[in-house]
Image 1 (cartoon, each protein chain N blue to C red):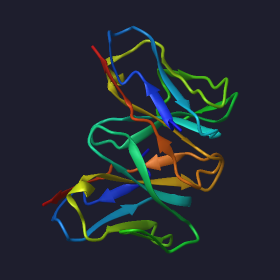
Image 2: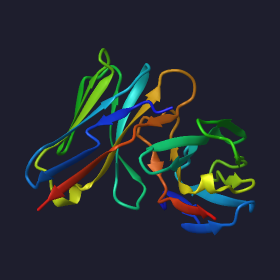
Image 3: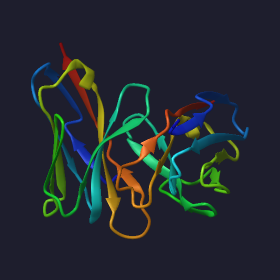
Amino acid sequence: SQQGEEDPQALSIQEGENATMNCSYKTSINNLQWYRQNSGRGLVHLILIRSNEREKHSGRLRVTLDTSKKSSSLLITASRAADTASYFCATEGDSGYSTLTFGKGTMLLVSP
Amino acid sequence: NAGVTQTPKFQVLKTGQSMTLQCAQDMNHEYMSWYRQDPGMGLRLIHYSVGAGITDQGEVPNGYNVSRSTTEDFPLRLLSAAPSQTSVYFCASSYQGGGDGYTFGSGTRLTVV
């Protein structure tokens, strides 16, 4: 079953604007990860935030995690046309072996 | 480093045929997984392995078989292809615990007619 649910399903912005995507999940996690998928390509790991962290930055990416609300957000600042892609959150559970459970993704379109 | 290599990139099968999707990684990752991606469904876990000789089922294992005889290779076998198995298949690998995230292959687009 799907663990993460991204919101919105699709997002269209202009270059230079910020893009915010949200992810909600259902069960306890060890960490939450964000991936990018360009059309027809494999997934690329962007950033990982552990359950004991609240915020993490990497370049133009900022991720927050609220374990009490079981939610996370991904902020891309100063978006570029090259950021056009689908973005997925994935959770790693806190019991047993390490597997990822993915949400359905947010499709981001950044127009020049 | 080549990362995660999947072959073939495209495949068309007839219903009832069998085939093996190949996945190889050169990063000495312990964990390897197979996912399928269907439109609007995100990625769903088929099978995974935490090391050579150890495999387990994921969310959608029916109709698929795996083995892990070496650290590098994790092939996915379709036993008797069905149209419902038309999908894009991704192999992924990571170090134990996935702390650095998973590395994905570029995918195999499979059509069953």
